Image 1 (spheres, rainbow, N blue to C red):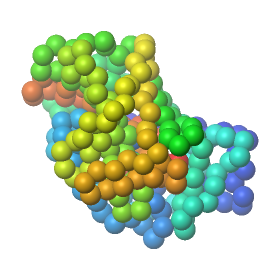
Image 2: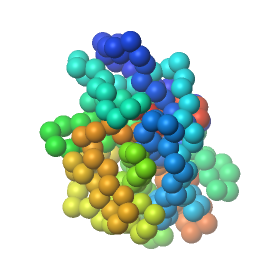
Image 3: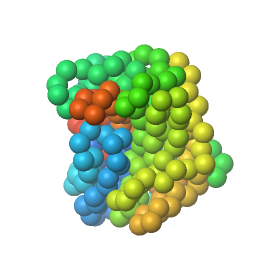
Image 4: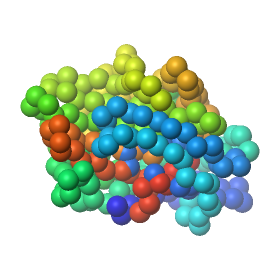
Length: 241
């Protein structure tokens, strides 16, 4: 996967650069001291067993993307809080469990996270229009990993048939959220509540979070395609938000 992070040119860094840390489809790890390994299952929203283990924290010279006039805000030690983060992703980089390339509507080209009021909005942009319905046995999902301290949650908008739903999960089965995604053309977006709580994890969206994004197109029981968006050519990278 080829990608790049897109940074606002007006964001002051106060003498330091935000960190991009090492996996598209959205994750989160606080950089302080490195993050403890966490196992996260997202059901069938990703190809295979979909278990996530944050990579060790590493510093790069490329700044994480961000964008407000107020610039990044410091949080916990080593953490950077952005009002907005936008990551770009290369085209034609979906991968299937049986090889080949997936449908263009599952090919992420850009993902953004924007704080607003007590919550936030995550927006996924794809290389082609997202379908309004899928045949029986097929599904589509667009999700973001949010990692804060030792907690990781995965929130995704999922299409089955003609029905969209937004779900949150950690290491257990997904929980449906009372959130309605907005789908139009090649864009899917949904709102995040101020706090996302599951049986074993809690993420406060108002505080610094590490993120990445992922899409999944399940064509049949045996064929599925996924694309990750991290802002780099590494599927294990995480961005400050």
